[in-house]
Image (cartoon, rainbow, N blue to C red; front, side, top):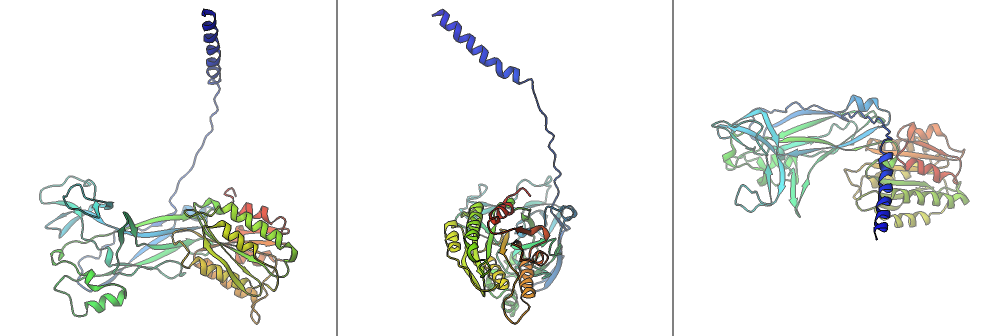
Length: 442
């Protein structure tokens, strides 16, 4: 028994010494990264001063691509939103004065406020005051100015959303906060590098003291608003109102579609007669591309349309990859090349009911020839105009030109820049090119 125990102990000792010797060898790899902001935002306070009921006042808010973003070749465009959040401040004189240098953003908390005995759907947490409160001062949330502030885009180009005054900045339902945001988009490839938003204050009136035309004033600005919902209690007269505008980036376009956390993508397929028997290879490549995107409820959504003499929406944006591949399998070759309608159908779907506003929009066009339909017009010019409109709407366009009958110089004008144009020698090599387009390693 003693010999056996000794042998086991010796064996254990040998095993233990192996990592001890290995630990003397080390390799150091220097890893660095420089992190910069993608947007430059004018964060100076927007103060409307003393205002009076039913005044209509305007202030600008500038949002631009940062110089670092402009200098970096790997990235092109940004999606962002402007959100309105409660404002907390130190006030005096029953809320009629405040300390503008010591404020915080209030945060919505679902459930009952632990500081009160009331049963509530939500409450606003201001946190600890930013400085010591002295006698005569109070710390808390200001009466909200948010419902009365519009966010109006500059329409240069028309690719941002507008939110009129007299709206709810958020709604709490099903235990969640649902924000009512304005969305913005900037892109170097479209020479759209600055948004100048108009922050429009439509001043509310106080209960019992509203003018006879108050209802007309409200509905003239926002026809869907109920004027009675936006009158203020008389107790708030002369108080300082506040709102914080929260600008947040939701997406940065990088080379390779899968560099994005998730996308809404329309696959636009040429099914003209020139494809012929190669239609089988086109379908195989397109279906493999759908598999690479791995559509899912909380991930990528994919749709598909095709074009020949005319364009058709074969399947709208969906999380069902099997259904998208079935739509691709149903295609047949024949006819001419109406690229214009193919682009327009995809653009409409990416701006329609199935689109997710905060998710980047992509279009991938596969074609083996030049546009020659609709008849009676310059087919190339109208297709380019459709592509320009799609890009102005915030859609990133990739184009894969197949074979030697395409004009790369022209198709690069359809794509969102030269680096968004790919070539395939024929349809048998198309699958490889689509894999390169999808991967996040370019």
